[in-house]
Length: 275
Image 1 (cartoon, rainbow, N blue to C red):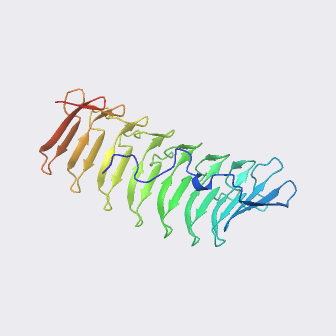
Image 2 (image 1 turned 90 degrees about the horizontal axis):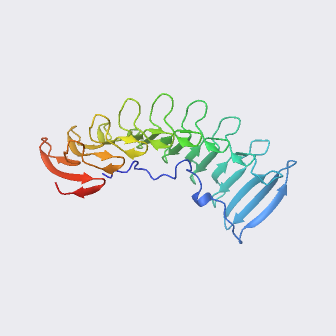
């Protein structure tokens, strides 16, 4: 298994939106301007079979109309909604009813992704729900992420900022974050863990300030664990680089199922050395 901090492709920190939805200039687009509410203009862009509706205020900023219609709406070729965004004064913003500022939909109408924002920044809503949520096609949660002021952040109860779920609801991965950095929680447990479908730990890693780091007790920063609970491999890190611990023991060890050492390597500052 790879040592990546997450098994799920994700967008840059604090920016899970954009990509195919980013504003682009297209000379083939058909633009219609439709005055409606005083001070607001409705733009309708059509490119082939796809349409984009945007509401703007007198200053040209995206703005939800008074009836709560999303300021921006993208449609699938069949006319169904692909993405909708709520804006206030040019910034993405949850509407007054607390529903997500942004939602994307599959062609069958099921929610694919949703996010909460305050004044343009990703932010958990007052009820503590995650600011970002991805869904499996059957509607169950695939991934959820907590944010505070646009940064990944464990919620106040200390639960992981990020969780990823299988379609059966079992947890596949969990990650602890502080101020947009992977960070072991105060109890010293690993910042990142992957789980098998039966709930047993498959992989775990300790992080400090967004770098893999052996914890204060000198135990390995990274461990792979077999289904029976025995350690399969362990790795020592210092400031994000593989490094032999101070006692000179190997940075990397692999073990037979019975516990005997199968293989070992020495490393200094991320470079393998003879040993």
